[in-house]
Length: 534
Image (spheres, helix red, strand yellow):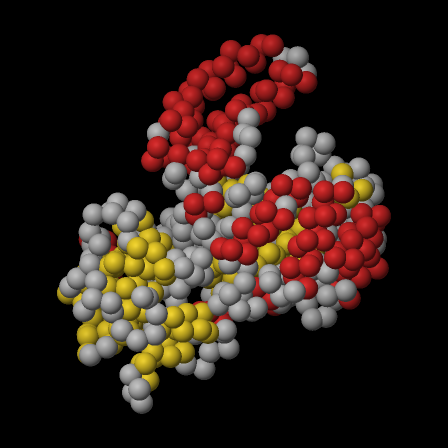
């Protein structure tokens, strides 16, 4: 079945030795370190002796290989191919990402490390994103199984083969009254959330809620079955010295300890400020680990959810073409989206500059800034237009959506953390419409929501609590969502519940049962079903 396995990159060849041993219906693949070090990426290729004709896609459907198209299966998707003679190819473990595309349908790339697979960054002293560009080498024991019989596939949802909606709320604007309204509203509709909170009160807003001043409403969320998550420790910035002391000495206000941390702003102890925090990576990781924290936000969104654009596991939901096909998109929204989600650091910084100058010109009447504003606009015009007129670019997934890094692991110091990526939601009326929820159900997709339940920003249409009240449209939407949850047509976990399920995916292993030569799951706690391509 396998013609050859090989490393394409000279850097990887210097650090690794790759071997592949095929015996009957099994192929054992060993990727062993020659020397310890850092590499910019890690992947290898598997060339089959016949073309791949079909694959199991992210929506659990069989799809034919399209000439020139791209097949991508990440850690949250089944890794099942079908060769020309009808043989199924299954990975023994659901690790890394499979990619197949272009003109050669016999060549599969297995990606184990890549910046788009585990996107993490630190802010530098100028506030620019500096992404992790290298990965520490490691050894891998992998395998493929072959069968013309039915093969297993796992469910990424605890409710078998249903979609996932996980809410992570940022508490920037919460007041005590807001907390009570949210709690009552979610109880009414059977919605579970991961609720961000500030541990201590230190805020430019006198009425900002925190555990220190409003312990009752905050802990009431936990008592009602929701999860609490640190949104850093305070709303506003303390001095660097005071912040370091606070980070070193804080304790969980509840038992078992809060285990999820969502960076807020540019607090000096955030993961995204680690390089300038005064802590070594080991000190920082030991401190969080000792306090029970294992789950961290990577401070990135796959994109902004809109009508028809919300399934975080389907990269095609996050393209300019899909946005325009399902939504009325203004020029400034498209301009921002292209620069922010397709662009590199240069484009992001230009967008921030343009946005800032527009506000100064319109609000503060600083006409002297107009020439520089026009210069920035014209400097990015060609880049932006290329994504509006070029067919290929219009259908190109956003930078951090292509490999769907929904949840992934990364070591800080010698401690392993689970990072999660989100999708921004501001317009609850369009994102959680019955049509969008039904779309997510059809695709058996997933979204981890990055939102502000108490957002007061008037320019954000469709926000959940506008003026302290829930609109009729949002009442209808959330009631519909709650009904789907109640009927077990959709899984609504806390973030910790979601990650606990993901751990089971990583631990799962398929094997060839010698009793009947069928591929089965070994000691899996995941929902499993058996499928066959016909």
